[in-house]
Image (cartoon, rainbow, N blue to C red; front, side, top):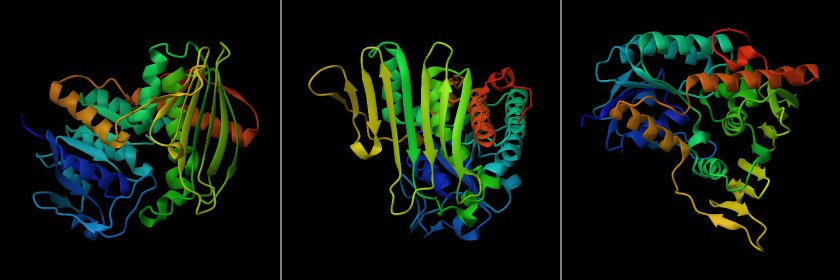
Length: 354
């Protein structure tokens, strides 16, 4: 079986993470990279970057990998089957559409975009070009979250009453040119960090009927801390907190709790790798998961789908678009101080609303 050739656009934290995994993959490899910085193209990744993990701090062998200073050269490279878009968020829309138009499959980092109309353009381009577009919402593939999803789907804790998700840390000052700290580029913590939990909550519970939120601006100039409630007409709700306003040396943390009629499932990054199941016994049941990350698991999933000729069923761009719409409603709620019903134009593609 021929290995899939990946072209990576952007060699920051996520681009480097993709590169490391793909270069060790049995069914894929990196054939080309694009980055504006010459030292990155040469593999001189001497500055480590990242929050949960660190990527870089070393020289990386680039033998056999074509390195481009212009995006169009990578898109025209016949050795590239799949384009990985790991560029700053404002570049996602145009890059994804260009890659699809060039006949490539695409995996695009989250957040999909900052505006619904850009999400719609990407979805329309994938449909028109008949190519796969997957949005890298890695938490859907993170082992602990995946285990909780499976237990819920299997009825282990009965009907869900509510879920609580939290993702907090210090300001991420490691990005190239510090672009994450410019809310006009990153969307602030609400879009770049909190979007993970917005996405997983609606993946787990479905699209809510209403959204309300409070928050504050922070170092990016945007909404860098938010506490949101997503409500459902049947009484269920999700409580979501996210932000990067916490003072160093505060350590990044992510956590999830799901309360059902017959039990509670919980995991916190600070509490170790095991998911805890509370089922009225004297001690919680400890559920072991594998040591992989969502970053590697989502790539493996995409590669399996493409090699097998199967359509991607997880992290569909239409679903990621809903996550952007819900984040926009949270932003509106913070700014207006009121709750908002989720309109039909967020539940479907094509309306172009912001």
